[in-house]
Image (tube, rainbow, N blue to C red; front, side):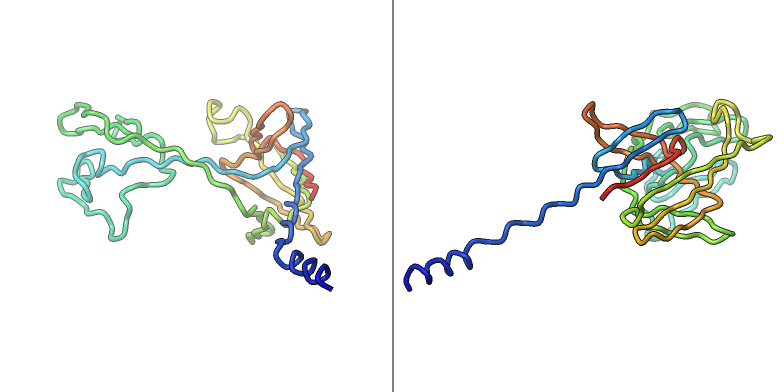
Length: 215
């Protein structure tokens, strides 16, 4: 009887072993002709945070637009930083790179201001456009993404931005077996990141032809 009671007490005191984490892999085929099997795949987005114009000009909370002769206060609640603004700001026929302040009136360059910051975050949703409507699909609910692309004739993008401009569509297969056909998809700066025996691999989303998740 005593042994039985001790055994029951041990069962109560010993915590249950945590459930094993679900391993996710992705079989990937790219437009460049490569094939990969990635472990722990994630979609990640890179972004740049640039200092505000007011910080570059040295007047916190206030900046003076060129040629206006007056100052405009920073909107209430603004953080003083802009996420993903243009990399180059043009003033007339003159431009300056982020992190460099310019005195337009004097025509001289002032010392560089605060440096820009690079960031990266995991993307939990994939947004598809279907007949003008946006559909947000959780990445965790995806079983596969099959992309198609068509060359855009007469693209307005200069060659140094994109040697070839493609318009992408996609068919998404969900965990319940249903399909969503997106006639347009643009995931911006997103990459598919995962690991192999050789190390971490980052694949730009627009090089993806097929992604098949295994859970």
